[in-house]
Structures are given as structure tokens and as C-alpha cells.
Length: 161
Ligand code: NI
Image (cartoon, rainbow, N blue to C red):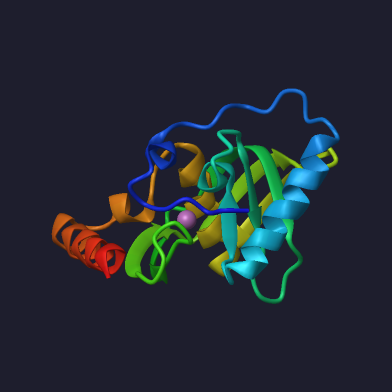
């Protein structure tokens, strides 16, 4: 499974609602979790593999892999927190991003079962990052312009190398 990187227009498009959540998504979710592990990431969203559907997978240390299909962010904490983030689509580059410290999300799993999850810490962080991917938003959109330009310059340099 190839992960597409910054510069590919698909990363900037909005993903579509999955309807129906048929059996094929069990395989897709499994393949995405595998790609996530291979890339040593903590989250992977459909658009990152060119699948313009509202699905992402998350696997943070100490937790099980989780699949989110057609997620809705129901609530976010007023409390914000700064944490270093990276992205499999912007390999090798990280930046501090400020996000809500906790989130309540509703979604369906790969079996088509609905669930609601309240998360904090790194899990909340990754859920919000992956949700952004479904909207065509990248973490570099959530940092200051000088920092973004620095990252973009480094990324271009790495692409040329
Ligand atoms: Ni990402």
C-alpha cells in the first residue's frame, strides 16, 4: 500500500461518506493497519492511500488498533495542548501543533457497528489529526506561517536529495 505525500492534490480533497459500510471495509481497514505498522505511524487516513473515503485507523502505544468510519467530532475540550506531530505523508518532519486536549467522537467500526469514544492524551491528538485528513487539512495548516514555510522548504530539499 503506497502512502501519498505532500504535493499530491488528493491530500487536499474532502473524503466522501462511506455508504454502505460493506464487508470490503474489513479488508481495507486491515490493510490500512498493516500499512500503518509498516510506516511506524500512529494514524493513517483514507486519502493518504488515495482512497477518498471517510475512514481512518489509529494505533497508539498501549492501545489496540482502532478503525473509524464516517466519524463525527461531537465535542472537543476547551483546554488546548501543544504537542509535536508528524505525518506519514510529510515524512521526516515534525512540528508543535496546538489542539484540544480531549475529544468525543462517534463513528462506525470496520464491522459497521457504531460506537462513541471519549479520548484524551495522544489518542485524542491522533484522532483529531486523522479527522483533519478527511477534510483535506494537514498539520502544517495548523502552525504559524514562518514554521510552515520552514517545513515546506525542508520537505522540498528532501525531495530533491
Ligand atoms: Ni497525517
